[in-house]
Image 1 (cartoon, rainbow, N blue to C red):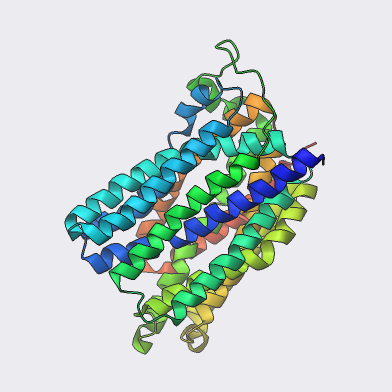
Image 2 (cartoon, rainbow, N blue to C red):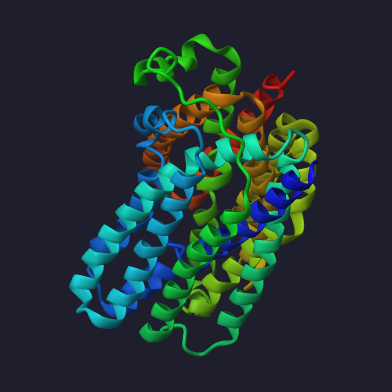
Length: 409
């Protein structure tokens, strides 16, 4: 890499670290839920946090791609998106400190909608910037290094929370949220040092319509297999909360799961998995991103299968306090292989505006499929969390083998 590329490399690592630490400190499944619950916000407001944040950031992307392709550089759009995320997250913390619970709940939902919209812009443009600023062969290593460093920081912060006696204090939680928001501000500052080579903006002649982006699945076999692989390997992401449910159903009598310490133990496990495995998966993805998807998916499927066996046939092991955080840790090692393999693949598989089309189309399609797959799995959990885990495990097995078909020549 040239000196300019090396400077951009370091800047992107720093920026990504700040973002991932911010994500950990404002996770809607943990911190935000605790905050609004402690405030006494309405249950419906708490239940909508995850869908708003996750699907809201992916669904709009196919509609945004044509607008983004009109710009020679994507860095200004990305930095503006970071600034909007900073304002959105910090406003939640400020609202928690200053507003009544019901109003704070509404503000949180509105702020998360703004956050998700801004994240949609950043999701598309970040892949373009990475592809332009960093040469092929170093992109997976960059993502892995950033994930590793952020995982270390998140682990330290989670352990600090675990040792604190004030996790339920709303002022403490609000302060954590405000701190999380500042991570996006620091990320925007780090991005000042990224050099993005400019390209000619797409003209209307070359800009794909929404319909044509969606039909990429039909006419582009490589992209179609990637969508199928990514859809099935959603099991490596969607299965994560089931470990918490399994812990709850097997350890209720111990009182262990009732405390905030249990959820923080899961945060520590997830952060450690990120810190310890990301560098390996990042380097491996640069060599063969499709094999990273294969091996990560197979590991997730193996741990998923093992968890079902423990849940049904090994009750003594299932009732131990840290069995499920340990399983969650091992499962997330597999998930990191899927995540970094997927990110590296979509950046390496195409160049220029075709990459933008790939990212926008795949994320929008996947957002819809997340809702569909989650809708299928949800009724299964009524009978047993193991049924939903079995579905996701089967998806991971299938997706891992299909990943072998998306080798980039």
